[in-house]
Every structure is written in structure tokens, then in C-alpha cells.
Length: 155
Image (tube, rainbow, N blue to C red; front, side, top):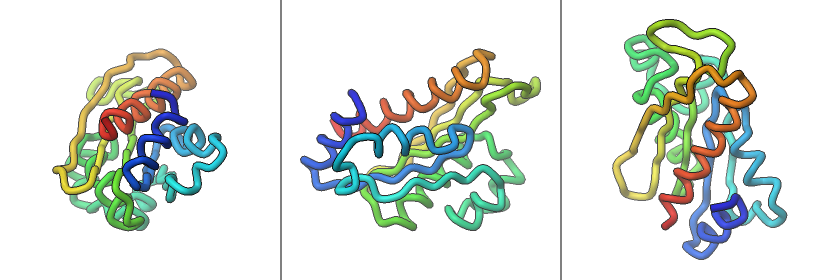
């Protein structure tokens, strides 16, 4: 589903969307707001690159960051829930990961965690291992996956 189709599906349901992005730096928000008229569906995009921003803007718990690290499903889930709660939207997607270069044995380059908060459903999270594709390709793949998660939530 294209960003335009995602917006149309949200519009048909009367839903509003928010994004909470770390490693993608706003690419999902940009993909959605590139579409004219998106302001009737897209509410806000949070780019929370630092742990302090995650806690301050999205209410990610410091304990969660300390216990699991910023690149974790637990943090992604709290980012999505915080974005939805703080902005009052129906649907929020969150992304946190290691775009590269670099990473470690425990958290390799290309690991990206996603969170999805949707209406009254439990917050969902998942990890995708994109591999060491290079920074630009990991970020683009993460953007596309997040858009796919939004599309799935709307169908």
C-alpha cells in the first residue's frame, strides 16, 4: 500500500496517525506528509534520537532503556504507546534500530525494532534483521516496513 493509500484508508476510518522515529530520522513522517492533504490524517511525527528525547517526549521509561537498551522491542512498544497517548491518535508506529555503520555482536547493524499502537488493541512489537546493507538502505527498508505495518493495521 502506498503512502497515499495509507492516508486514504485512515481517512475512510476517521483515524489519525502519528510516528515515533529514531534511526529513520523522520523518513516515515516525510513519506506520509509528501502527500497533499495529509494534514487531515497525519497528526505528528516525533524524531527521538536520544534516550532523553525518548523519555521526555514519549514517556519511555528509563528502566526500560536501561534494562533492554534503546534498540529493543520493549522500547519500540513504549515509543508507539507514548506517541499514541501523547498525541491522541488512533494509530502510531515507532522505529528504533542500528542503521549503521557499526553495531555489535549483541545488536548488529541492520537490526530494527518496530512498535505499533492501534486503537484498543494491545501494542505490538517486532524485530527485523535487515542486515548490513549500509545506512541509507537500512533506513529505507525500515521506512518501508513501518509503512507496511500501518497499512496492515488499516486493513
